[in-house]
Every structure is written in C-alpha cells, then in structure tokens.
Length: 158
Length: 436
Image (cartoon, rainbow over all chains, first blue to last red; front, side, top):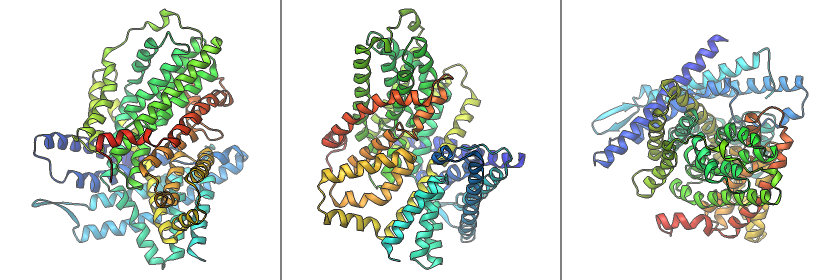
C-alpha cells in the first residue's frame, strides 16, 4: 500500500511541477509579447509537454483519493455487500482499460523517441517523447491505484 | 448490424456503464472503442482510438482548464472568499434575507474568480451557512442558497464547462465567456429577487441581523478579488490575452493577493498546485472519453440520422428545444454534469447545427441545464457539497426543500434565455463584432 501511495504522490508531483512551469512559461510569454518579443514555441511546448504531464501525471492520485468523476446513484439502491463487489469489479475494469491503453500509447512514445519526433523552434528542437511517455507511465500508475482499490479490505461504498 | 444500431448500442452501453459506477471517462471511452471495433477492422479501430488521448490532452486550448483551476485553487486555499462574503453581508444587511442574498452574490463573485461550481459551494458554504444559522435563518434557506450560488460559477467567466464545450463544439471560448456573463448575472438577480420576496413575506425565515455581528473589520485588500475578474475579461476584450494566457495571468494575480495574506505560504501554493492538477486530470480524462465517443458517433452516422429525423418530422424549433430540454433535465438528474454535456455534444450537436441554432447560445443553454442538474434530486452534486460543509443534523431533504424555490427562479430564467437568445449573444457580438 505504501508503494502505491508513493507512486501516486510522485505522479502528482510531476503534474504539479508541470502546472507550475506552464503558468510561469505562459505568463512570461504574455509579458514578452507585450514588449514585442514573444517567446517562440510557448504554445507548442505547453501543449506537447506540460499538458500530458498534468493530465496523466495526476490520474493515479485522482483514483486513489476516489475523486474520479463517476455517478454514485446505484449506491443508494444496492446493499452494502453488492456495492463492494461492484466497486471491486469496476476497479478491475478500470485497471484493464488503463493497462491496454498504456501498452498502446507506450508504443507511440517509443516510436517518437526512435524517430526523434520534435518541436522545431527556429534552429533548436525540443523532443516530444517525454510528453508522450507520460501516457504509458500515468496510465500504468492509474492501473496500480485501481488494483489497490479493488484489493483494499475496508472498501467503503462511494 | 447497421451503423445506426451500433451507434444506439454505444450510447446505451455508455449510459449503463455510468450507472454501474464505471468512471465516466472510462465508460465513454470504452463504449466508443467497442463501437469503433464493430465498424472498422480491429487494427484500424485500435489505431484510431489509441491516438486520441495524446492528441486531445496535448492541446494548447485545453491548457486554459488547469490554469483557471490553479487560480481557483489558490483562492480557495488562501480563504479569499471569506472577505467577499463579509463585504456583501455588510452592504446588503438592510434588505430582507440580506445574508442569503450576500451569499448569493459572493457566490457570483467567487465564481468569477474560480470557475468551478463545487469549489464555489464548498468555499462559500463553509463560512456562510454557520453565520446564517447563527443569525436565526431557516436551515433550508441557509443551506440551499450555498448549493445554488455555486452554480453561478459555471456561467460567470471564467467557466471550466464553457471552455470544454467550446473546444468540443469548435466555438470561440472568448465569445462563450462573454456570452455567459449576462445569463449568469440574470440568474444571480433572479435568485436575489426570489430570496428578498420570500423573506419580506415571511420574516421568520430570515431575522434582521443586529449590527454588532456584522461589524467585523473588513480587509480592503479583498477588493482585489473582483479585480482578478476584471483583469481576465478586460485582457481578453482588449486582445491582450487568449483565454489560456488569461488563466496564467489570473493565477499569478491570485497568487500575489494570497501572498499578502497571513497563513498562505509555500505549503499553500504546493497544495493548490496539487488540487488543480488532480481536478484537471479528472475533468480532462472525461473529455478524452467524450472525444473518442464523438469520433465513433461520426463513424456510425447516428447524429446525422437524428438530424435527418428532426428535419423529416419538421419539428418546430420550440418543440425541438422543449424536447431536448426534457432530455437534458432528465439526464442531468441522474448523471454528472460533464457526462451529460459531453454526451449531448457528441450526439445532439449536429441536430442543432442543421437546424441553424447558434452554437454559442446553445452552449450557454446546455451549461445552464447541467447546472440545474447539480441542484436537482436525486444526484444534486452541489447539494451534497452544501451538506458536506453544513453543521451536523441538517438533512439532505431539508436542503432540497430549500432548493425548490431556486428551481422556480430557474424556470423564469430559462424561459427568458430560451425566448431571447439576444440575452446571451448581445454582449459577445458587441465585444467581438457580429459573426457573418
């Protein structure tokens, strides 16, 4: 369990760092733009690197804290035991979907690394594989968090 | 199986999974993938769907979502809402139900800086509900007003639902922001009128406040909070920033205000970053699933077929609007707001497009409906949020009883918004010029 917590925490830390960098990068660009010298590549770097880190980095922590967007209507209707069983099954389903998608997106990330996919900003280039790699990493962490929830002993409905 | 049948099964499967408590993003994405796999050779379906998460998440337009959520998280963590409420409470104490009306407008003001309904209800409810109860207010009113004030956040810019709608429906987010302003203020005014009328007719609902309780010192620095809203809208209006850039500037402005207050230190900043990252992940994960669904829907041809059907039946615009209003209300009662909005955008948008409806106006109407869904039973998320911060012993049914009056006000507001699209479209047309 402590390992799961650590993985989720690490993912959130990456997401938080990316969000902080995004805020600063964009704000500095606004000021630079006002001075007539915009920072080239800001929107590309924001989109290709920061955004995947924010969205997929924090996924495991969302699942761990039961903050994922879901509808709990059925919990009002089912007895507690059935509810627990359903919740476990749902977590296994989430883990299966996340692992499959992690496998697929992992191949995309490897391809991006191998062919050196990059954002071109003037004469310099910024590789985008780190952004793409956030998907398999974040989704695998999501699967781990979901499986931990499925196996947790004191499952509470909702 | 024909494409239409598959399309219908995909939507039914998504709804079923959502009701079985599968996370909404997984339910939408998985049913979309299965639908695509039924229409296309498997490798093509895999390739089509597995590329969506990155293509969709890695977008500059969506960067506005975490940036505005970050701004809101700072405001919540720094307790900036408290002073707003004190300020409004003092200004409005002579009016019947003054504290409740103050809560309502504090919700509007806080929503203008935060953009999230639940966050607004929690932040406003935490301080306003106990204060109203101490002043002898009716518990149903004191709790319901916080649940309903939260919904104002979704219309008064910046609004997270409007950003997501704008991207999915390919409409200008800046235009949507300005389009939401008048309907949001109209709703706040309707709530205030309803509260004042009720409290004037039945003074026992809201005893007049004695002066002493409200004369707590007010920190003038709090006027800076409305200033953030002006900075954002003004900056967009003057063409200084795009919505995403406005989010970054707003977050830094909120951070500057928070830094001046005692108690908000590095720990508060880190917590706000974490909050905003998690909220962004939760919301955009659902949006990714919805985008997969949109792709599958396009493959099945279901939305086009629905549009054909509406044309064939020669439905009058009024009948179409009433019919979809019913669908939105019913879905909003059982599903979560983002699920409803994204599902309806994926399936119903072509119908409205073909019938010549203005999609900016439609966005405002859809967001209004999902916000109403947040305060209707049985799944009124804002009501749950209001309960979570209310003192022990106030039943959910008590809050819903108070909400009924707000729903009556909503009937008036919705009738106006549906009858007069100009209420939504006048301001964006004025600011950006009419569209061709």
